[in-house]
Amino acid sequence: MVPLHWCLLWLLLPLSSRTQKLPTRDEELFQMQIRDKAFFHDSSVIPDGAEISSYLFRDTPKRYFFVVEEDNTPLSVTVTPCDAPLEWKLSLQELPEEASGEGSGDPEPLEQQRQQIINEEGTELFSYKGNDVEYFISSSSPSGLYQLELLSTEKDTHFKVYATTTPESDQPYPELPYDPRVDVTSLGRTTVTLAWKPSPTASLLKQPIQYCVVINREHNFKSLCAVEAKVSADDAFMMAPKPGLDFSPFDFAHFGFPSDNPGKERSFLAKPSPKLGRHVYARPKVDIQKICIGNKNIFTVSDLKPDTQYYFDVFVANSNSNTSTAYVGTFARTKEEAQQKTVELKDGKVTDVFVKRKGAKFLRFAPVSSHQKVTFFIHSCLDAIQIQVRRDGKLLLSQNVEGIRQFQLRGKPKAKYLIRLKGHKKGASMLKILATTRPSKQPFPSLPEDTRIKAFDKLRTCSSATVAWLGTQERNKFCIYKKEVDDNYNEDQKKREQNQCLGPDTRKKSEKVLCKYFHSQNLQRAVTTETIKGLLPGKSYLLDVYVIGHGGHSVRYQSKVVKTRKFC
Image 1 (cartoon, rainbow, N blue to C red):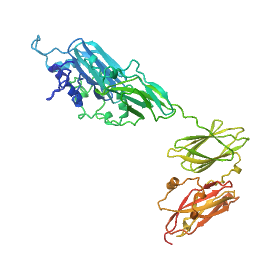
Image 2: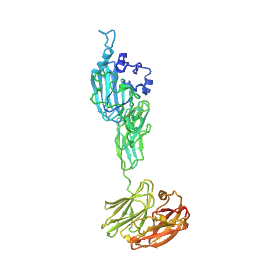
Image 3: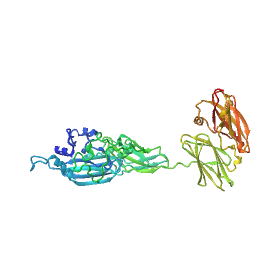
Image 4: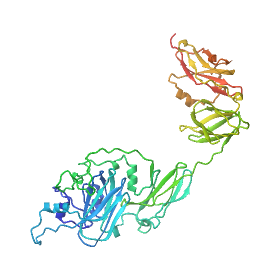
């Protein structure tokens, strides 16, 4: 690409008092100009030897031009789609004859020369449709006006273009080794180690490069541009340009050329142009990670999820030109979680279990004798926990347990039960679990379906509060405790502060109100009341009722906060 004649500048650029000068490889200011991104921002001229980035509206073609004045000139054009497939073609038109006194007649008017370029279709040299980084390379190109036309039919998108007449010496993109594959050399539950052969750009050409590793769970990427588009979906990188601010209106329709048929855009796919100023909505963030690691060609990715498929891409980037080339990516599935030791449950014995945050524990219950029913008693001490019970592989139960729950399942001769306990995402879990085929002999006390404590508002005084709770047909010991708390004390504070499995032996003696036995064969009458005296006026108290079984295990009812009257 050599300097254009002034008449060609007038053909390609709209008339303006400030005519833009086309940069070429022969100009002294070329290197300074290509560093100035705004220099080519409004231009449809492709500079020689510099990568440009631009934006396409869906179904709106965009054209770029450059001139080769001498025959047998090497030519290379590279188009990089970012986040959408592109349709693009490169065509060649003959240059109009120069207007000079040496011609056989008067020079053609400028308007007629412009019209000549629009009316001539030119010779198509190359076309492509897809989202790969694609090249047009010719060692000997004829002189003429070259036109690059691009179109996105899926959505608005970014792309990059690089063109040069000195491809042998430029080498803007880092080279790949003879084997450009990324290999997985080690695979674990949460880690994957990758290795690849180094780029000759660093070892032979001594150019500064760095490798960037990209990890995601969707697919491999074909360019770093596509990665950046995905990561920066809601950043300025992916915002649609605003007409009149980010580029000249002539970039939209006719590139400054008048049209014989106003309102109809000439497109090689004959699709209608969308209206300007369309809204662009930010896409949701995706689970993708990009890590640049310098010039190392071995890298271990950590903090992955077990038994999950990941896609890995490696890009070699030239630190000077800011261009990059993609290795052939790979994918791998991390190993499954290691099989945990299964805890054996004994019939009628209480087992304490600790489950890490988001962790899991497996328990096994294999009754020795035949049985008609199996009872599971779960007492969750801290955060809620999820329990799943399978009998000989068949799922029988799957529920979240908070506090105290009892499940009774139908039995089966010689059946084996697998219990899976999954911890809460907010914190670790502690629980007591009992499995038995003889629920009448369990060490835990029997509980009513409703373990709430009811307070009688009308019976409140300045120094006392009256409460009631339900019992069962089994004679049990009940102990009630009180504790003064702040007025803003709530149930969430209670859960954070107290281990639900702690018994009355952990309470202060001064907090004990009384203990008593009671039961009733008539469940409708299995209710008891108690008046707590010696309270202070206008104070809040936390009341707890513990029921203690024959085996010494205690269960606390749901705590209740009461407040005495301030004035009596």
